[in-house]
Image 1 (tube, chains in turn yellow, blue, red, brown):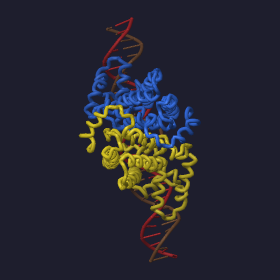
Image 2 (cartoon, chains in turn blue, cyan, yellow, orange):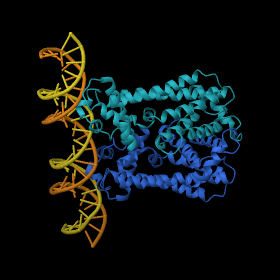
Image 3 (spheres, chains in turn cyan, blue, yellow, green):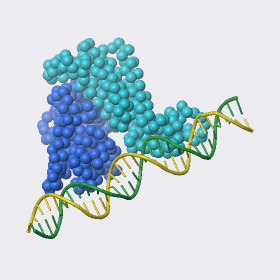
Image 4 (cartoon, helix red, strand yellow):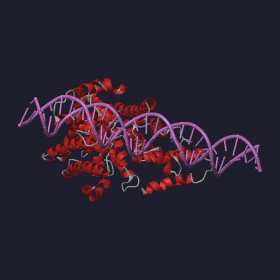
Length: 230
Length: 230
DNA sequence: TACATATTCTACCGGTGAGTAAGATATCAA
DNA sequence: TTGATATCTTACTCACCGGTAGAATATGTA
């Protein structure tokens, strides 16, 4: 709350006078909106709430955004861009698949610790129009598929144990998404500590030779059909 | 959709005549409500929607529930009860901690594949009143703590590698919670296949001797202060 | 200084949803 | 059969929210 107010202060101050600064003010609105959406949800945050927080009135917001959904769309776009860029960087690396996945885990956690990254995970895309929802889901699916490919690559180069990459990708992504609900940047837990343990544990689950035991035949089976296309 | 209608049919039929059956009808309302809440979210499902689905009118619903929130509270209660019961069963077992955690993973996945279990994860508790939210958060925290204890036990008996049980519990629970978003009971993926791979991978990440490498000093360090209390 | 325009405000509209009042109708038990 | 009561309906209230109309006011510029 105190951290929040402190971060909101500058935005509020930006609107204290009427100096012209469309881009800066637009961005300030967006930052305030994403924080409030994360805190109280998109649906429970009214345009009035956002305006009040910025010390202006509701209609003034419509000077910077055509409607409420445009804010949400833009937030999603900024968030997914961050993830795409990280994946681009990883694709450019020359490493075993397992290490690329490890880099993904670390990078993804860092992104999610920021507002726009966390928004991609936490905000309910059911609030979007049909068109907007379709677009966002597409981008999310692409990200998921790129993670699956990293895992499949690791299986090919022998660094990752045979498994169904679709399920593995869901597990890895899900574990990280969970963070978006409980992680508090101002809390006592150090981000690097979390990353360290997440990487260690998820690597342990993926790597070849972990607990051999299990029914590897099931894995080989799916690796034929389900794997690349997943 | 077709599966949904099929499952909703019986409930609808229950209200076809006015024979007295308060308990049965109340339960039918609840089953319909949880399905619709999961499909369209709590906020976007109106009392009218639920009533229409059951072929009655909105005020009739208020014969079985005092208000909308009472439905949500009851759904949460039924869901968390399922989880508590499972944890009771696991606590009664005599096994290494790692195997108990494995049982938890399997049991939790099965519960989440059902409507009420999934509801605990997916429905936004921000819709609850302050009191209701506090209660639910308490129950969720208890569940989380019980999982942490299972992990800590495994560390004591040597079946689980030293780590911060708080982070480990979040990782395990988060990975499973992710399922609640994408798993479709009528889809092509077999539940047992998913369970098998989840158990294998998460066990691999927890077990002693996975990838030794990592900085185990960090683990020992937290095991002193953060561990039991976490 | 004076004009064009960016910024913001007051006052409103239309729609929706939770919840209620009060009465009609069927069921059950005696 | 009849009365008590459970069940359900029609018609409504109240509050909130997204969005707009149109005017007021400040700003930057020529």
